Length: 159
Image 1 (cartoon, rainbow, N blue to C red):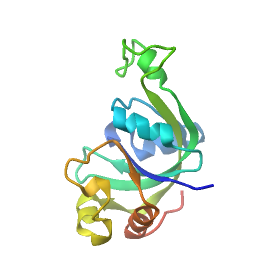
Image 2 (spheres, rainbow, N blue to C red; image 1 turned 30 degrees about the horizontal axis):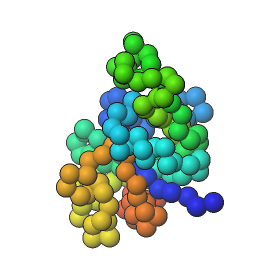
Image 3 (cartoon, one colour; image 1 turned 30 degrees about the vertical axis):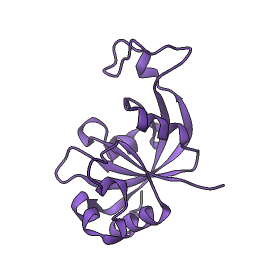
Image 4 (cartoon, one colour; image 1 turned 180 degrees about the vertical axis):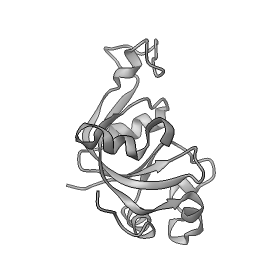
């Protein structure tokens, strides 16, 4: 099985790594994504893939921990819920527009890795998060990029 690597962004005050750890089974549906490119990337995710959990819209923005995909993409139920802030009245239940994967916390990094630190590392020059205009909420990463970010964070802390 070939594992793929990702970077997935969320605002920590909305859904941070701590929220994931506190969820039953330390897993949660990664819902509410409303970007077609990000949606398409989620549909490529496979069980066992790894993702860097990135806290955005905070100072400094940073990679906080690692999670794994534990369930492949399913229709995002929030698109059909009129009470949800992610409701999409144009989405058809027979042909859903939005998808979500289930993720599980693996471990936080021993120390956060800020966006500035990512940008300063020449080994990460091609990583999408450091590229101008590449601020997509879900991004593919290479194994080498994933491993370098873990190294920069001092490795994984005990969960």
